Image 1 (cartoon, rainbow, N blue to C red):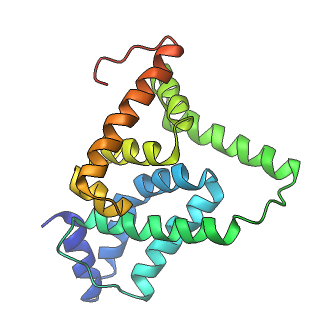
Image 2 (tube, helix red, strand yellow):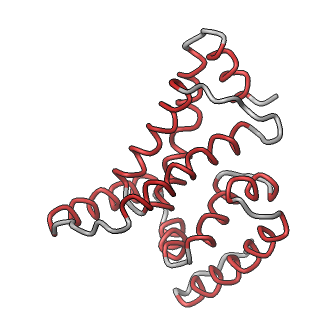
Length: 185
């Protein structure tokens, strides 16, 4: 049983420190994953908070079928998709809001990706299609198995294997255009 499950069970049994541990352990990774989906730091932060609020208020039943991280990221992904559906027709951002968003994204990028190679990798990933970006993020940054990624993205394990293969090829091509050589791709 992973730490997330034990912390969540302790929380459900009345130990508030269990939720504190969950937030501490999963908030940064979940935020970065949601940022990749929404492309908006403020929205990703709000969705991440809503995901944890949902755990506190609704206390959904954890499914032993998946790891806790997979279950939590699935809840977050579903909330992000709902957010995108609600806001897909709203395009009333002002230039100042967009400039502020870009400044926030740059600050986050620079603090999270300090080395030049990581910045290049991150920028190349931003140009990938959303499914490729998600599958690579979950696989490499969150170290999820193909089965866990399939659960989060609502796809079959075989579809995830194909997506990872295609995403790696696409990313490698973009990185080579930038003059970046990464042996592990």
